Image (cartoon, rainbow, N blue to C red):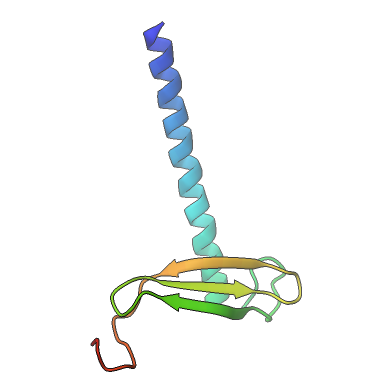
Length: 90
């Protein structure tokens, strides 16, 4: 009985990892499309940066994009480049 439980848990673990990897691949493809200036959903040149947040010079930035034509909305956490305009970080 213990063998079947361990096998089931192993299958669930592997499935969870595969789903998460697929999710990250989709997010990367969406961000690449946005960097080229196109909405990943409707492929129009209408994607807009609606919110940008940062925890300072040394943390990730949270970028939120929205397409006014199709209603696509997504947020991305990207690495900060390490240079702030305030002069405190370089």
